[in-house]
Image (cartoon, rainbow, N blue to C red; front, top):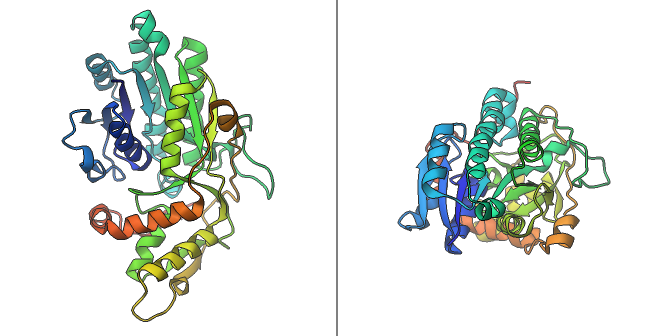
Amino acid sequence: MPTWLVTGGAGFIGGNFVLEAVAKGVRVINLDALTYAGNLKTLVPIESNPNHVFVQGDIGDQSLVTRLLAEHQPDAVLNFAAESHVDRSIDGPGAFIQTNVVGTLGLLEAVRDYWKALPADKGAAFRFLHVSTDEVYGTLGETGKFSETTQYAPNSPYSASKAASDHLVRAFHHTYGLPVLTTNCSNNYGPYHFPEKLIPLVIAKALAGEPLPVYGDGKQVRDWLFVADHCEAIRTVLAKGQVGETYNVGGNSEKQNIEVVKAICTLLDARRPREDGQPRSSQITYVADRPGHDRRYAIDASKLKNQLGWEPKYTFEQGIAFTVDWYLENQEWVNGVLDGSYRLQRIGTSA
């Protein structure tokens, strides 16, 4: 049975990944700091599973990471841990530098020392997989897509911090020989998503009868990737990826933000109509745009498809319907998240 150390495994993508990994017979050591977006309720399905060991802690705590590596002897480390919300990075960039840059550096140093001490056969098979974002590439015009050779041009404190972490991972490979893999993904959506992000935010506000905020003209374009597809891509890269390489992960689903919001409204109207009979699209409210808002992202994931055989299974229409149904069926999880400090308010307007 393989053993993986997963950081950030109580968050959105990490939590989905851990649930699937344990279900597939992997022993997972799950290290998460349980900041506002981390939620142990996501892990309830595996809380009594002996193949899931949860540890609350920070990736920058080298002594803790060193102890976990020595105790559990993982075959791979997968780094999902990150501050990830652009609006929060505008209000408080320091936390993003601390976790995404300084924290990643501490993790890399501990993992490097662990890997160097492994027997030759285990060392050759070991992998460090770093999960990153397409936002490091900046913004696109009306045409073209991000490839693995696109020059980095981050435009927010969040994307700058992730770009820095990507460069550190690359440097640890080229300087120390650490066997690393990096994935850069497009916008994820699906179950267990903290409701500060567009899709779960719109679902929550629509059900509450509140205005649905759309930044600017709503025509910003994102490539949408269903989280289960992303998790499968990460497992594929871990199993087959070439050491030192980067792989873009996309959903082949470019949509304007306003299209996404209207799709959610249509699904909710069919599943849970408003008592007054009005369409939920009547709740759409255009608000001032995010400072420095990137206009368009699009991913070229052909390298991952051609070299490793992965491509997304879910269309946007399938994924968004699944997601809306999940939130309707799991309001207790959503309400538990909203019991904390976040109340669906807008942030990131301080620039």
